[in-house]
Image (cartoon, rainbow, N blue to C red; front, side, top):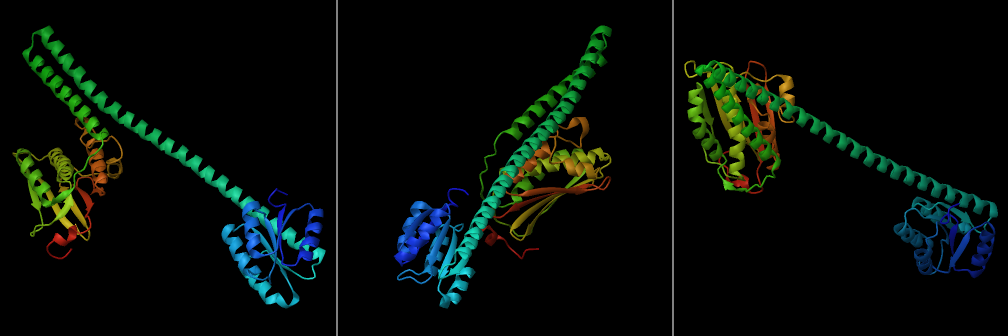
Length: 392
């Protein structure tokens, strides 16, 4: 028996019963404390914290049922055995309903008392085993969670390194090609080789700069500045900024905005950055599908709509589209649909920015059927009041 299991409190207003029970239980190996009232019992319990309490049901002042409730509020694990007279069976049953361990009728039988005490010890032991098992299970869960998080971080680091290695390898190959052409041009005094090599070197040096800036932008913390604004404004600015580029690529860039001015509280610069990246990607996807100024087949549409308490921006194109593998990797790895020309950080950075604003981003599409990107941002409380017209 543990120390607590072997510590017992007897509560009875009759001194003779307290003395007899104390001697008998001490002979059984218990460390016995006594109290003559419910109030005194609570003071002794707070000081000694016995595992088992034997209490009379009928006592002056605080009776046994009231003492049972107080003891359970102090320590739900304490085992309370009720001592009852033959006419108190109803009270004894009520005490069992209130989580007493057992009841023993007076005059007290040694065998009945021993059985009740054994039940109390078994319940204490069972609670201890459940508690130990729960604590061990929680500890195991914490350990496995830490291991899983560490493994996921390691996997993410591995994916990042692999993606960076691939990007750097592509740039290094371009630099080597440029160096080779410059060398051939010098050796053969060939101006064409020199020009081609020089252009390759300039292009790949620019790619190194773009990759470095993308890495720095992705790593630095985001400082948002949410202000009341028209959420359509960033879309208009992006369309105006990219109109010459779209025209040069044979892409029709279209805006589909609500006819009534909307009001929201968000960071327009952050939204502008997200939309800029998505629209640039959409124009390039149309170019990859064959759109040119001479054969203007590309179409990119930027749509803004309200969905309940959220804003949704959609950027759609009729470019090369996305396969299942690309959709799964777009926002979680250093991965680019542009091949060697892309750093792979753009969409990861866009997702990070969207998440910092409390929103979500997802992509739809299939090979040869274009792609659609959706950004959803929450409206802050009260912002919806400025919207005109019903929600779609």
